[in-house]
Image 1 (cartoon, rainbow, N blue to C red):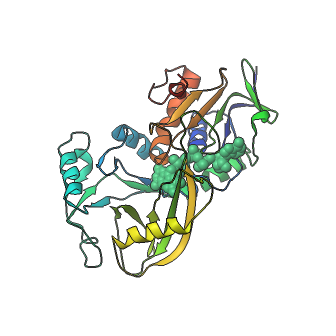
Image 2: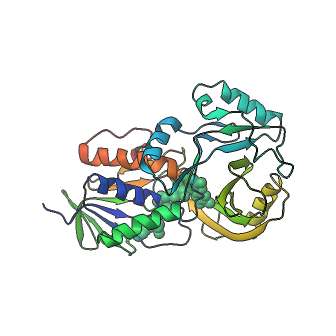
Image 3: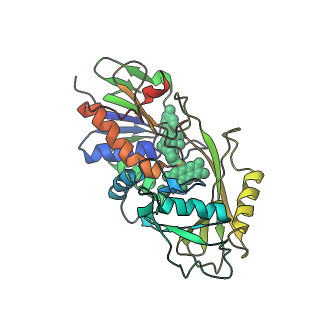
Length: 338
Ligand SMILES: Cc1cc2nc3c(=O)[nH]c(=O)nc-3n(C[C@H](O)[C@H](O)[C@H](O)COP(=O)(O)OP(=O)(O)OC[C@H]3O[C@@H](n4cnc5c(N)ncnc54)[C@H](O)[C@@H]3O)c2cc1C
């Protein structure tokens, strides 16, 4: 059957946006449906890419491989390489760092040189710091806006909410709102109930700190990301209850207190935002066919690492749907239904 599109994508956050761009780059005909909703993850995400994570400072899942894909996919002017300074608050944190320096997966990302923008009296450097290299910041909103505008101009975008009843699956195609495609891919982020998804609310602040003059990100309990013009992003919190309540006073206070551990310079609050991360129970993406048929798939579970993981994830899912390549069992949605 000749379908209207090769791919219908439901949702235009990072998952749907990167999938759409990957499909268009492969010459596919796409239709994207998206209706903005309060709590969407990508529109509040800090956009940080950091291959060394957690208190123990270990490499994130397949960090080196995912970085190569993300670096090749996102381009200037939205992609900004920027190192991250990891401040050690105590000896245990420094020991985690020393252990990582001896780890062959982590070591290529780590260095110890001094940074003149950090070695200043108005920054509390704890008992020392290390530098995580190959970090980056993606201006997610600017990237999504550019993609969305391009899709609208080429008549590939409809701003509409799609309910379950709007999607009908057939043997050789699927329909959404009366349009047909070889596949429908659900990129609904936290607004759905995919097995294995454990969404987590997060809050972050945009602040002005005149005179701080940072050129790197700093991480000490919270991250501080320089945006230019004395503006910084500070984040982020994690909570698993009241997912869609929006920004809270408690979240704001937590972040301001963590910021005090980095600098005591005067801070002007510019913006306070909240969103819901579509996190998976095992911190891996969730993708593949769902519902027992062969035409409806899901692409979700990007958690706190949408920027790092969506380029690889989108390419991997398309290779599976179109070329019949096996899904990596670590990301196959079926792992949560056995
Ligand atoms: C506070 C916070 C900080 C973060 N910081 C970072 C960071 O620094 N680096 C990083 O890589 N990641 C970060 N993340 C995580 C990142 O935001 C997510 O991994 C990523 O945005 C997930 O994208 P998504 O497309 O799956 O979901 P979303 O961005 O939520 O997109 C889903 C979209 O689909 C739409 N939609 C859903 N269902 C339907 C439907 N049925 N019909 C029509 N439209 C629909 C929604 O309205 C929305 O626009 C952060 C998240 C939060 C909350």
